[in-house]
Image (tube, rainbow, N blue to C red; front, side):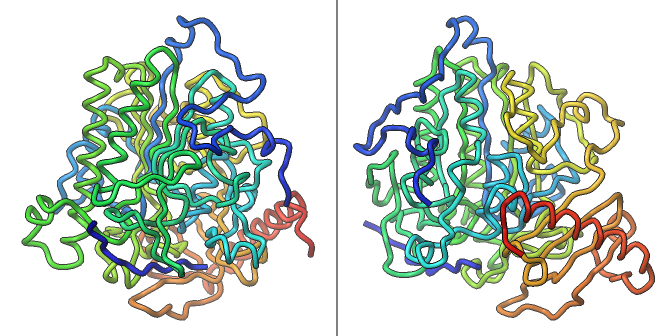
Length: 483
C-alpha cells in the first residue's frame, strides 16, 4: 500500500426529531430507507424531473480554468460546461474556509444562520468546544429534494460533523461514499491533521478500504454507479472533491504534462487537470446514457486557493484579485461558478451580476419544482440567467467567519460597489500581515483591493458598519447567541 503522509492544518445536543429519523445505515447499508412521508409519484412524473449533479472543488483559485482566464492550465471539460451553460464572473462563496462554505451551500443560508461560524474540528476537539457540525435541525438541499421524490447521494468530502446525527445519512442523503473530515491522502485515504492519524473512508457508516486507488478515480466509479442505480428515479448527487486541496496528488501523466511549470504551480496544475478529467468522464457517461438534456449540473469552488505550507505556499491563482483562502479579500471568496441545463439554461453565456453560493439552493428548487420550507438567504438565479441585463438580485451581502462576535471575527459587508471588511487577514507564507481593522474599497474601481479608502469616505464606512451591526444583531438573536 502506498501511503503519502501529509500533515494538514485546520484553522480555526442531543438527537433532534430529524436526527432520530435519520437513514438506517448503521450496518453499512448500501440502500437507505426514505424518511416517512417521502413518496414518489408515477414513473413518468419521476422521469420528467431533472436530475441534479452539484460539483464542488476544494481550494480552486478564482481564475483557475481556461474559461476564467488561466493560460497555463488544461481544463477542457469544465470549459465545456461553460460553453454549454452560463458562467458567472462575480460569484461569491459564503466563506473563505471549508465547513462554513459547505453549510451555506446545502442550506441556502449564510454560514452563521446555518450554525457554522468556523471549520468543524476533529471529533475530540468538537467534544471540548461543542462545535459538532451542521445542526441537525437545519434543512439541507438533500432533504428538500428527497421530499420531492429524489434519491440523494453524497460522493466525496463531508466536513460537516462526525456524530451519527451530524453525518450525511442523517442530513438527507440516502447514500454516502467519502471521507468525513476535511482532507485525506488520496492514495491511502488516511486523514493527517491532528493525531492519531486515522483512516477516513466510508460507505454510509461502514468503513471501506481501497488502498492504492486514487480517491478521484474511486469517486468517478461511485458517481457512475449512482447514475445507473437511478434509471427510473430522479437523482441528486452532491460530488464534493478533495481536490485541488493539498496534498497535491495529480496523475503522473499530468505532472509530466506540466513539467515545464515551476513548483508549486506544476503540482497544483496537475491536480486541477486530474479533477477536470474526472468530471469529463462523468459528462461523457451522461451523454452515453442519454441523460445530458435532463440533468442540471452546477459547478463551483468552495473558496479561493490555499497558500498554506502544506500547499507548498501556493499553486493556485486569483488573477487580479487580492487574497486567498482564509481571507475576505476577493481572492478568498470570488470563485468560478457554472450552471448547465440544456432544457432551460442558455448555452455559452456569461453573467456579471453579483451572485452567491446560497443562490444555488433556490435556483435548484425552482428548476426541480421543489420548495424551500425555511427562510433562506439565497435568491433564485433564474431571473438573471433568463435576462442578461437583469439587475443584481442582492442589494446587500454579508460575510463573517470565526465566531458570532464581530470584534474577534473577520467580517465583510458589500452594498453596490462598496465593500467594508472588518479585521481582515491576508495569509502570506507562514505569517499574517497586520492590516487596518476597517478596510473600505470600491470593488468596481479597485478590484484588486490595493487601496483602503476608509479615511476618505467616513460616511460610507458609517453606513456599511451600521448595516453589518444590524445584521449580526439579528443573526445572534435568531441563533439565540447570548450577548
